[in-house]
Image 1: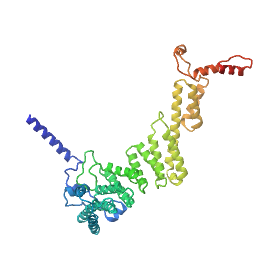
Image 2: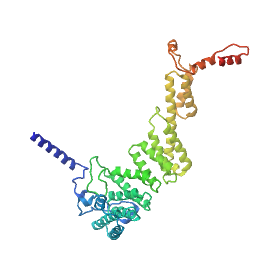
Image 3: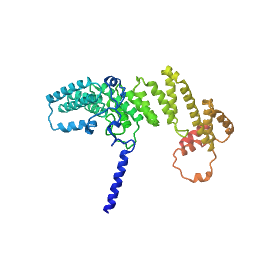
Length: 429
């Protein structure tokens, strides 16, 4: 029995070892293998996130490369009473270190000082909560982590600030930073796709896993929770819509583009919201058996683009004209589908109705000629098929309360005043 357990343990250890060294898993990869993009102050202001050439070397240990600094700081000082003097001292020290780091060239020492400043800012925030000092300390902690390329920690500090102070005075700058982080993560996720079992423990620039998912989470929070009326909420909405469209999630993309058109009418992305929204709606239409509401809405979008954005629409004339023609074709196909349906059931009155609509409203489609030909063929045929086994149908009891009234109205009762007397007698009966 012990031998079997030993063999089983060996197999489990071997499986874990294979998983750890498999492509995409970063658990046991050396530090030099982790990509690092060092961001200068000018690059940060432009949110370009362009990587410097060469590899960044670091002498920090694992606990420094990917720390849970906020959690450690809270745990260390939770039992200490708020102290404004101590908080101010920690803030001033952090401020001095922050400016010292900013004066240094890109390198290990600069990063080390920014990390030290960030930790002191967090201490200052915790030592004097619910104050302007805490608000400024959390903001500066996010800035320090951002400058040190610790984007995960930077975003955590920013989100803690927004949660505690939803309308803080740094909100516009914070959202710029978070948008830049999310955009960088999204691009990084496309450039270096992760498998579902990838775990990151060494690259401080990205989350511990699911880089793309975390970027989309930031965009979603920016537009719906943290700052839905902010300057970058429309950009975040467009980014989410584009990513959903690229992933083939056309209903989600349509939802984002619609939200962008409705909630941000002054956005610079309005034409894109209409144009890409049209493409998304065309993708959501799945056939004549289903609703044409997506086609109706797409038709409205085309008209709006020509009316409100004539210059931009002119540049996309080829696609817009092709989309308009396809919409007319699909709508005519929908009517022809129902016409054939009733035609097969020999309900020629209903079939004729649809054939007539096609001939009148969609005479520029291939269905118009077929509808016209069929109209001539069914002319004079019974409106509805004859009831089979009518005697049996009459034997079946009915709970219809309207039919007796209809039958009574059809009765002709003779009288001196002709039809008027007959109708009166019928009502009295």
